[in-house]
Image 1: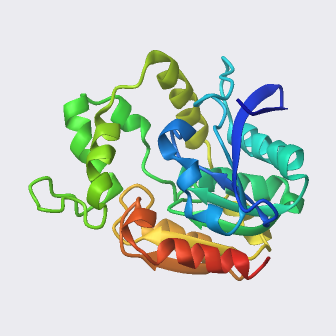
Image 2 (image 1 turned 45 degrees about the vertical axis):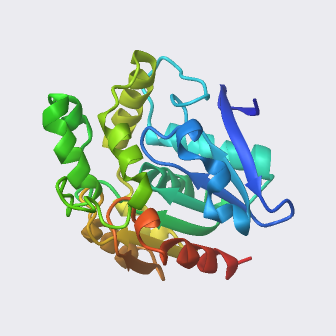
Length: 267
């Protein structure tokens, strides 16, 4: 098991892709665990040397018994870049990972080359849906809300309940219905607590890195309007709206090629 000791914790990470390619830090979403997100299959690996990792409180990374903040997550990412990549690299953040990426670039702009923000939000008055609300509901009541947050078109009786997901639809359903173990739930609760404090709206104008913002047209969790705020306030940012919801990287075949082309333009 490969770990790096950063900020007093051991962070589990994997490096995949092109051995001598440009470095990319890939930051995953809420509850992300590399045992479930299959980093070896990432389309980024075909073109870059990609650093994937489990964030604090999750997966095989340490789980400190304390409250977490967005600064903690950003500083973990910064230290991991310095320790493993050895310096400045591209950063791709998806959902909660995009929030971490925004805090990272605000705190340590020297470590970020090109920035990709997928299905995420700046926080404040433009926050993503508050997931702790679902934690308080009966699981059967919460399930349809979870599915429509992933894609507002969700229709369980349709031939294709969420357009574009194909064979992974059943896997997504199982993930949304699964009850986390107490250990996993504790880390998730701390992550969600940090997420509730995410607010980089006032810092967006200070981000001068080439930035691509990607949104899913039918995303209920991180609506397109929030991506528009990011693109409008980050100088020179480009907004791409894809045909899908929160899982638009699986739903729209244009998504990953667009990300790859944007990153390669700076390599």
